[in-house]
Image 1 (cartoon, rainbow, N blue to C red):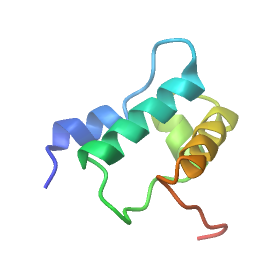
Image 2: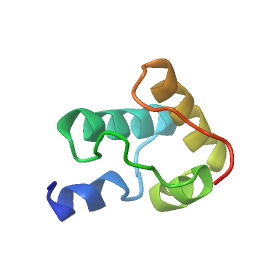
Image 3: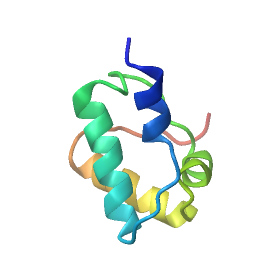
Length: 78
């Protein structure tokens, strides 16, 4: 089971510029390192944006990049 500190770090607010790229990099690294498990459900775009301190459009852009990399799949609705 991944370290809880590592999991908290994944969803900690961002402080640097280039936020969409930073969100993508952070989530990609968490997936590759196993901090986020295969098939694990991520927070909604709105919740993810709030946790990271970015705009929902930034979270959406990052998730699109992760989809293009084949690291996440998304479904509409709950």
